[in-house]
Length: 208
Image (tube, rainbow, N blue to C red; front, side, top):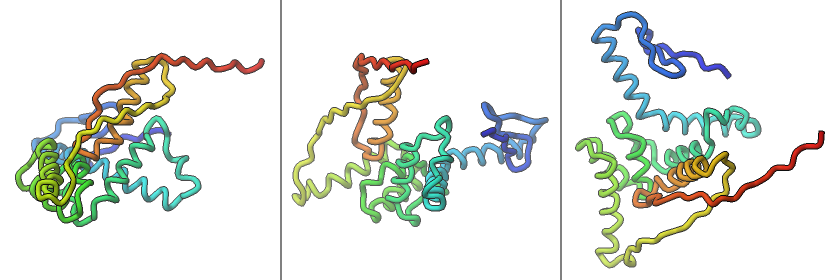
């Protein structure tokens, strides 16, 4: 399916397939408006994709997969976006206050009240993603410190994935991306390494 360029608010900027195109000579006001629009789009893009993905699954339950062009979409990523969106109630979303999707994703493990407190603090104090994750960990440690929960533990989990790829490097990059997407919502979980085991699959040639 051919992608059609998008004009930004009818101004001298256009979103091309590979770049932002400048048409003519934009004024300072037009440049500012385009920058703000791009910033808003960047913060909201993942949420918009999640809402779109939810809609097509509900609207076209038997056919929605036809809309997921593999060159454009990774359904596992869309599922992760949707999971984040469904884990945070509408009243807690603060994209309009400059809080990124990644920051929202980092508070998924908290109850709704604590989600809102952390996101409000992030909006008011312009906290970084790292600072927000520290806030989340403080909240999670409180029951432990108060003797209401068992001691927290650090656990290393080994995950083995089987992926088709043309080279070991491509396999490692693909696995790295999938696992990072899966654990990114946990905040305190990190992907340490990815290493491809040299398993070669030889496909049988079709009889001519």
